[in-house]
Length: 462
Ligand code: ZN
Image (cartoon, rainbow, N blue to C red; front, side):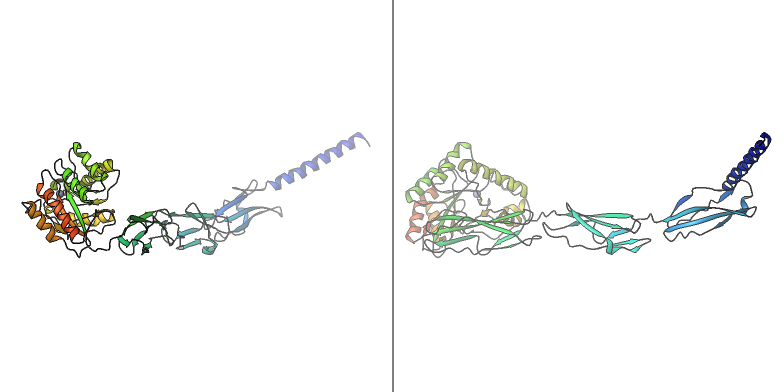
């Protein structure tokens, strides 16, 4: 072959290559998409056709086919086609219609619910709907953790919705615990004591635990306390007590001598001396006096008497100005007595008695409220049913004697005698021994008030 021919052949070869490559390049670039090759369109939003362009001929020659249903999740193809010199050239765009909208989950009942104690939360219901998948209520998954309920639902496209419900287990209400039978009870020595029991209920818990502590030893005369404690599911407790006296006394008549307003330097020692001589126990409703008389309170206690609470100030205006003032006063004398005797005393007597009318001047209705509340707080308040008159009408020891002996009923198991322990109360001091002799002669027993003593109370007048 000659060199010339080779050159021609190379020339032709090059020409063919240029033509082929050029054609490929030309047709490949004849049409191109505007915008991305793959586009996503949210369900129900419009697909915007951006079209295509051609680089060598008029764009109007591009034929677009294919449809996008924006109401239906799926993949759609759009075809762009152009013809040139009888050759068809096409390009495709992929359009994905996707559901990006999460289902809607609605709770019935509150977002925060109160559940009693340890009780189970009763599901109040919910609904779940998805704009695309429709009702998904059946697909809701429920999980409870740390008192939060999680409701989760997922649609077919994987969109999730979680809603929370908060359980508030705050049970602040303590169980209701009441005694069957009397709060104060008695039983004769060496007989059998049977506890009449209690009733218990709770706002929440079905199971309330009740413990009874204490025992009544009927082989031994004395005062016994039974303590009932009810505990609900979250630990709220209520305690009530029953006071039981074991007595060897078959006499019906019991006399409780009570001395108010002491101690006093001149009268208390004399009263104590007589009581000791007659081996009689009594009850002193004390008020606050100079600490130089504290030894008398200690002596009353040490000699076996009951030191009970009357008032700190005994000032009606102060004590009955408000309930707060009343309790402040009461707690002050309670603290003082506790310091001197070691006993947190719950036996009280209202200044003027619960039937007083003087409190009307300071606070209307205060006695009605206090008498109710005091019982609820566990206090036992005592009025009296025998009055000696030693703070008023009685002028002589004979008057005191007559008033008391007239007032005592031998048929009564709770003669509560009101007397006073103020300075130089000689009429009472001088009548005391005779009164005791009278009671003993009538077959009565003298006793001090304790928590087992049934309350003696007046009607309230304010
Ligand atoms: Zn008084």
